[in-house]
Length: 389
Image 1 (cartoon, rainbow, N blue to C red):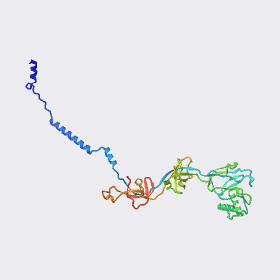
Image 2: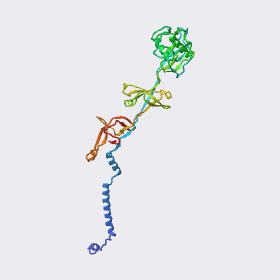
Image 3: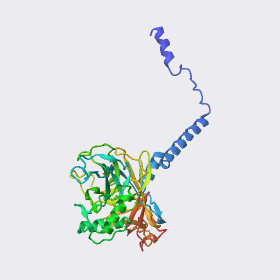
Image 4: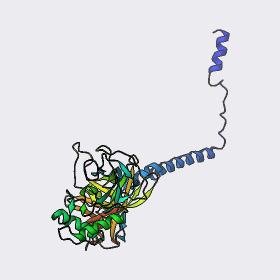
């Protein structure tokens, strides 16, 4: 065997291999303690994961639970209130056309204003001097007085009786006899004198000097002195019905209103108190929109308004205190409107803890989240009603 091979063989034999000593692990006890602590921490984290829940999950659990919310029946005033948009409707106007002029006893050849008396805004009542045309006065009388001819001493008829009645109502010494006599002629003369107008020829009452005018008509304008009158150019234009505000109300809103009721008007520049004049019949437009009733309201003299400015009409009803429940407590079924109460008899048992008792009610009006109801033997002040589903 070669020498080198012998050397290698000798080195590899167990007998010739040197002993190797492994170093000892320091602090072995600490290592054991570390592993034990690690195991305990992992176990505690697992247990905490079971019992501790995320805030989001807790919130979801609360929402999913049905809350039982109740509120007490109260004795209170529930005042109705509505807001309606109105529009201004102009009143009816008429022209006053003088009859005195060409072809009558006055001898005038044309109708011309010789005295202007009326001013815009003047209110016309029976016996008002309307002006002077071709030197002769024009005097207002009520509509319905059927004057159609000149009256003289001895004239009889219904026109005579009607004129005598007007003279009497004006405080003049006339008797209603149906026949013109000295007393009637004297009363007519006194009327002309009262108006500082030239009386007619003795013994005559010229019918053309009396113009029928609705009492309370308001002057819009009047012709100036020197104006030549014609059918197209009247002595005056009068308004025989006032401007009003008309608004559309649905059935429930209209039920809260009545003719003669006080309401509040407001525009962009003015507020005032007014009165409901008329409540129309229920109508439905052909297009199906705006079904309801037309409510007509007077325009006060101190209320500034124009046709193009929207008007708001509101009401505040006057009501007495009575039983009321929150609107949120009202329910409905085929039998009507009802509220739900905790079932007192069922609450004494575990099986009936969530049962509810229905009490049907008659609602009279709603306002500001409350509903006034008619007195009910099954529902007393202080009783709890559910407002939750």
